Length: 328
Image (tube, rainbow, N blue to C red; front, side, top):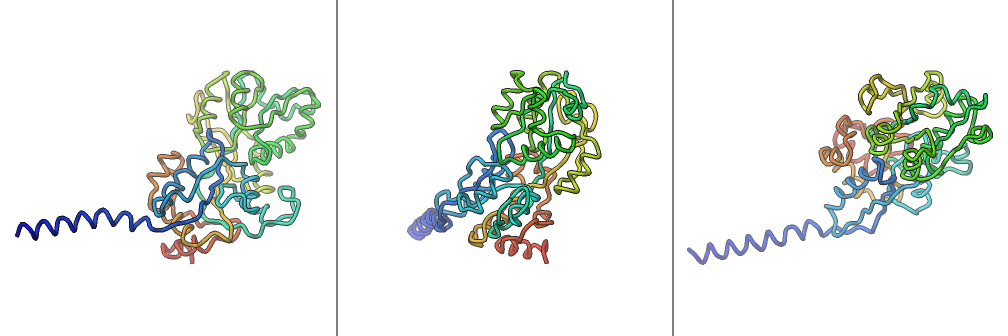
């Protein structure tokens, strides 16, 4: 009897040691997930999703890398320099279509949507001594010192459009004696804190660390965007209206009118179905892990992942959405 127990116990130990290895027999070539800068929300979001997918494979096939912005990221995936990416619906569609101000040449028809995730918000922090109507006064000679983001980023693109709708542009700001500072958000935040610029901008999730720092310094306040500007941004570029709730940032006692951009995960048509299927499945079934990476996922609903995709959806994602009844 004791010998039987010993044999059974040994068999159980062998099974336990073999089972995890069997679960990790899947292999996949290294795939890069191009995201955003370390101070924003895209990098931790992509990292969390990558970690969930990597549990199914031997090694860590999905590797998160810093991004090139909502315009640069699709260009990287479409040209084969990255495999997964994060962008915004309007820019992803423009690059897919081609022959437009975002993508002047032929579109990248190999791009495919995977899922919609948390929207990001156009946020403009202004030092306390900056007039609230400063943008509309540039044409009258007012000096603006503003940080606008990196080339190819959605933030630079959006701020440039907002300036144009105020009757000026970056060249006009500089002609009036102002400053338009481009570059990584970390450098722009330092410039704002050190008073080299007076307006800090970023298109990012609410309560991102850089916006918390900016709004807590220099008696800052958030720019309240006029309704006519918001209406034109919605009509011309597919943004959505959004009010930043009162109390979101230090000293913000009223809601602030702003704009949102829906964030979209995408890949190429060549990506295999299985890894895309596992990606959306893991996201839908592990919301707590996503919340730990970015608190904005608290209000995110997994069943909204397939809604209003700007370009064709990858078949691996379609398979999961149909299984859940989220797509016909």
